[in-house]
Image (cartoon, rainbow, N blue to C red):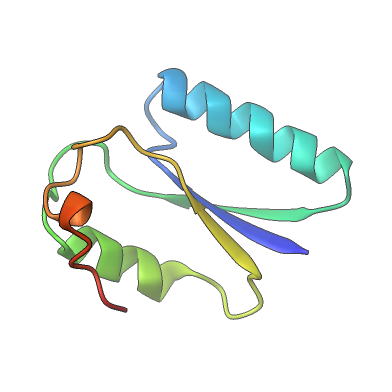
Amino acid sequence: MNVAMVTPWTVKCGIYTYTRDLSEALFKKGVDVCIIRIPRFGIKTLDIMKLVANSVPEEVDLVHVQHEYGLYSGLEKGEFRP
């Protein structure tokens, strides 16, 4: 199985720690993990999800998005369409 982890990877925070630990645990179980880094601050529109969608490798089976609720405005409305 191939999993893409979408996360604000460069910022040391609870989201980073959780994603790091989950990625390591999945890797130990034989799962291929790809980290897709997103900015924690800056882009706050649906453009961030378009950026993510274009960054996911074709062979990925599952995309896991880990973020702080409300960090990216518009996502809570379910407006994103790939």
